Image 1 (cartoon, rainbow, N blue to C red):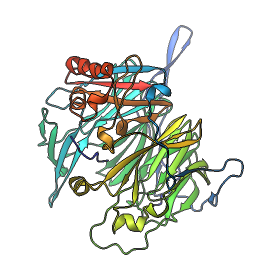
Image 2 (cartoon, rainbow, N blue to C red):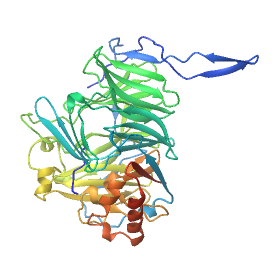
Image 3 (cartoon, one colour):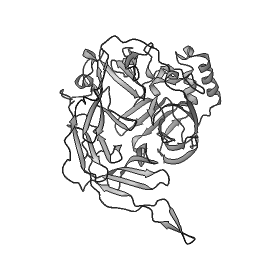
Image 4 (cartoon, one colour):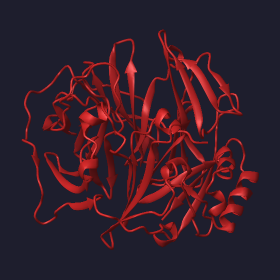
Length: 476
């Protein structure tokens, strides 16, 4: 079961045409009569009507009052065991039931996917149903669809049921195969948003433009929609705060890295330059062993560019402030070396889980790919930065792959967690379990090292959980 988990500057926007859409009902009682208010019309922004200019010049620098934390991996780090029970006191397990029939699909764990094209094909393994948590809502997202549940596990919204013509799906092995042209989902990249909303990206194939929209979970009303009339525009915007949107460039060769927008006027607030451009000439295939990070913790927006040693906070629409600096010395992986060259002694950052009291850091020596796994030449390490003690240490382990590194959850109702599948969102740490995953846990090398009570908990749940069910474990 050693599978790898696969994982432009946006132009200035202005308010365009206002269109009406079906929405919810608001009622007021006057003289024993109910008067229905007209549904609020959504805001439609079209990017072919753009205001020129940029409001602010970017600022990035260290704040004397709040200097960045230096995480020095060149020093010999102490090794200390990590226990979830030392950081959390409450476990809540919520069981979700898939609304789909077995033929339509179910929650995925360690699934394999083959996508064919008119010329060639691609594949991925270790694919899981993704989970999001926000404001007592749980969102599940995978190739089969996107569904919203409440904190009791009751389904509240079907946001998308994907239809893939000619899909070959084996429920027993969770192998999927289809042609790219047959996946006709109208929207994707669905995310929960504050205020009982969700955002999504899509494409209008009739009028030939990309879309990013926000809809109400309460009544399905379209709240806002941005129509990207030019292909160079990104459709993946994140909310920095109530009045600001931010876009991260998806092109590592772009001269611009981040762009912020006023959410009310849609004027461009600031463009942040890309100072981590490759100097090597791109020719033929290349590797890309790291990725950009964006995340929020306590309403603070964080950003790290691939191959950069600094994690910034976007503290205002035009200011990047260094929060953490990773020091790897001569083992640092640069963008040039990441694209080409020998990486056997270079460290690639694989994941960063930033919680209220600690940060879990997963990194590998050498590039993680099928060949390095086959050759046994990629080695994983796991570090913990304790925000309370200000100490950086290694977690005691034998270089297990992230998808096989088991952590006991020795709290009432706790289930052993795979370190590589822990997520922090909405001030909660969480992970999920299907019957297939619970059965897989028992076959892992480290399962027998777990406390006996934890082993029995997995066996009991594996025997009672339905094939179409998923447990979401939330730690607080």
